[in-house]
Image (cartoon, rainbow, N blue to C red):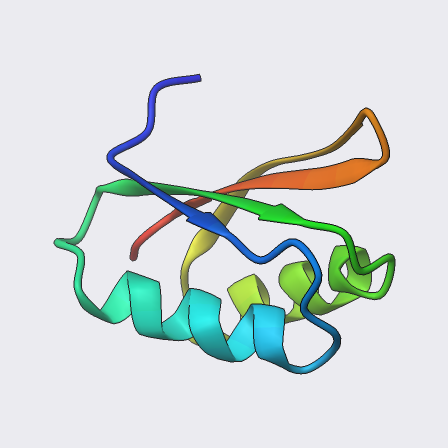
Length: 75
């Protein structure tokens, strides 16, 4: 999937992946896509809830080699 910016939250524990994802999205224009990589299993539920609460679209959520990869489209 194409993306405009990437944020690697590997090694960060809740709530830091979400806090830093929010900060990354703030620097982006509406319609741009952010790829987030996390090692925190809790980020799977957190990212879905974050997207729903903030009006950003969670395009994809997957596990790749022990890491969780998310694609968020800024609303």
